[in-house]
Length: 157
Image 1: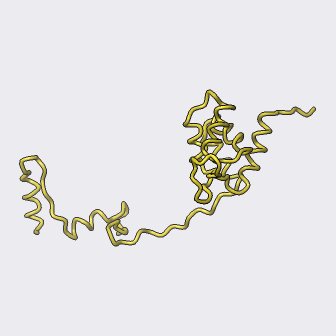
Image 2 (image 1 turned 180 degrees about the horizontal axis):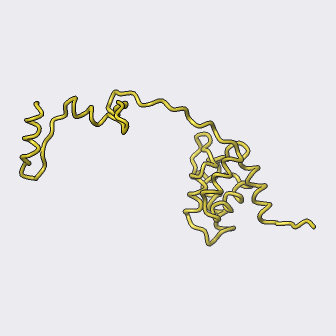
Image 3 (image 1 turned 135 degrees about the vertical axis):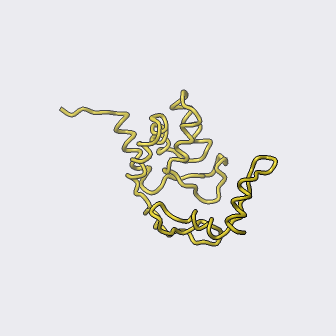
């Protein structure tokens, strides 16, 4: 289709008030230019995406630090308390109910989705006898030390 024909179609909208444009190489080329005018890789089916290197796995301190920075205080306290318990949904809810009756389901959701836990095995997370989750390596120890330090502050003179 010629540029003149495309222009005519854009000038004559249909009954719904929408013009039609045929996709042709010239139009697609305009969408694949970067801000500097240099061609970029189009994100079309079959076109390879740019390669990127994944981030290395964070260590236990980084995981806890990131969680502490992003989570609510209630969620961090709950995570510290859960570090001393076997992890399945029923136990997590029980620990939250005993230690944080004012807490909300959102606090537990923050712990579950906060990057501290991983799902283990094929156990059903709702199975009361199985272990459905585990802290990433070293996270449990960091949380136990952080939780005990904040709960029992000691002043040395």
